[in-house]
Image 1 (cartoon, helix red, strand yellow):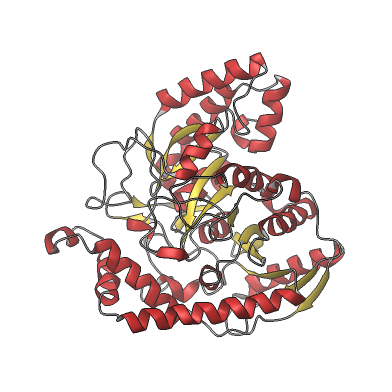
Image 2: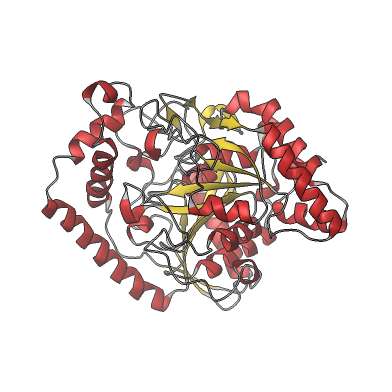
Length: 463
């Protein structure tokens, strides 16, 4: 087996025992990029020389018994939205890009670098990370390791394609409406959108307090390990929460016995593909076998897509505010379209949408007095053709992501883990917890993984 097929947790155990070299692990990840990236277009930048130099330093530290941090030597990629010292951040754009390398890391990048991660390069995003698929004027279409004619989802599609193919065990993504959970569900990988404020973010997203940073991995334990690192303090984020009281990696081992879990197959209003529904129902039964009390219960809110659009389109207007008509002509036309609509909203419209967020947050706070967790499908459909915003080619990406964006409105932690297949493509299970219960969410994700084998199935491109 190539070390590219190992989780970060397995790599670190091998480094400690002297059975695996960080240099070999980095070379194997780079070999995977060389072999497969032309098929999926996950990377915008690969810095092999820097990665190997970092890996050699890690190898020396492990041999001396002095690893510099909890990710020392783990190959990692960074979404091309997050500032990364020494590399440009293009944001999927010819226009919105910084042409020269930045001289500073964004907070989560700084944390993984301090923890010893080997940074391989930057991975794709749609322009300004604005939609639920990953294609952009600058980098083209990122596709799915299970079928390169299908989308990898978005906006962190490069991250999911990379970790799914062993092109680095870990990746940093962002999520303002589902952007780590959507691509993880479509590619059979794992992602966690943390409680808002748990992970520092700078500069602040133009999409405001909808936007979270989250780990993208192949296992729940790896997501917990990465969240422990990126949840570190950074003075640049004024919304940052206090340090978590306990390690997420420790909490992830606690299981679900005794928990009260609500199961909502449709949130009360979503049409779900029958094979997705069947996979979800089977997943819910696993939690009952694991000792949880499982009940069917909808949260009770209506589809919040219209207030979400007000906040989302207003954020797009802010993104494009500095750009001229000539510059906009070189940008994604659909992004320009929603930005122009967003610029028409009034302050009253915006505050009305925020009031809906408040109502949803209060409702979910009360809901979680009765239920420790909520389960839904991550997405109602399997992956569709690449290069489209929607399966039909018309409308907005929110039309097929009704399970994800509500929990950006409420700022709750939510993870996705693979739970089966529909039309031969991966299906995701979404696990949602009350605010600040990231450890509980990750414990449920890990417990489910341990009881099933969906996460062990190899993508088509690796067979």
